[in-house]
Image (cartoon, rainbow, N blue to C red; front, side, top):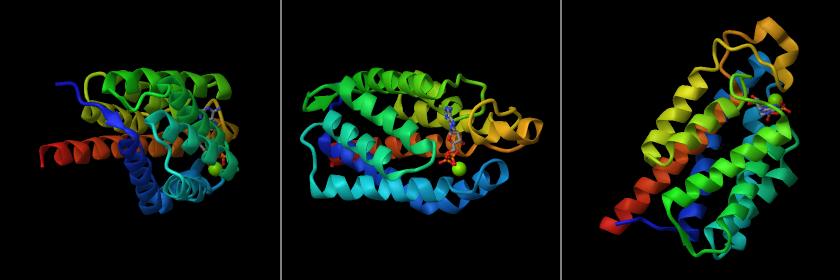
Amino acid sequence: MTEAYGAAFAVRWMETVAAAVDREAGRLTELDAAIGDADHGANLRRGFAAVADALAKEPPATPGGVLVAAGRQLISTVGGASGPLYGTLLRRAGKALGDGEAVTRAELADALTAGVAAVGQLGGAVPGDKTMLDALVPAVAALPESFAAARAAAGEGALATVPLRARKGRASYLGERSVGHQDPGATSSALLFAALAEAAEEEAEGAAG
Ligand code: ADP
Ligand code: MG
């Protein structure tokens, strides 16, 4: 049987991200303090809280609509580089999903792949530049296999940023001194995909129970 994921699933995903970035804000900010300006946790906490609020007030009817609305909130509420980048990821993915009431994991993987490509276009980074793309690219590549594989790939991608030298974003100003630190954005991208897997597990439990 092919599972289908609707608007409620997409909302749960975004709520789970909001809870995760709230819980992990201190760690994200600590990572950003080492190679950036110590605002990544606060940026994402504010952004995803606004996303959860907007979705609770006016829940869109389709998963695509949910992601477009979430992306729009991030773009308008987050001042740092990560807001427009994550906003573009979700908005582009939501547009790619179109107006179907439910989507398959394969469709979600295609849509998020388009979203990640848009992040690359907007920020001009490629994998290996020590950015969120180092987690996002392997995650969307693994998503056709399973949600759990995407979560694992994102986590490994984030860890793999430690020895890299940053070539994009604020951390790139540090040059060699960016080596030896995990990228904050790759770390939050791992949270995004961990939340997706968590939401999918809850969905499966709901379907079974
Ligand atoms: P800012 O750098 O403006 O303070 P944040 O601290 O919220 O914004 O986000 C920093 C993260 O954004 C970095 O760790 C990196 O993963 C990501 N990032 C920055 N610039 C780019 C870029 N050009 N392409 C992709 N990701 C980027
Ligand atoms: Mg920052």
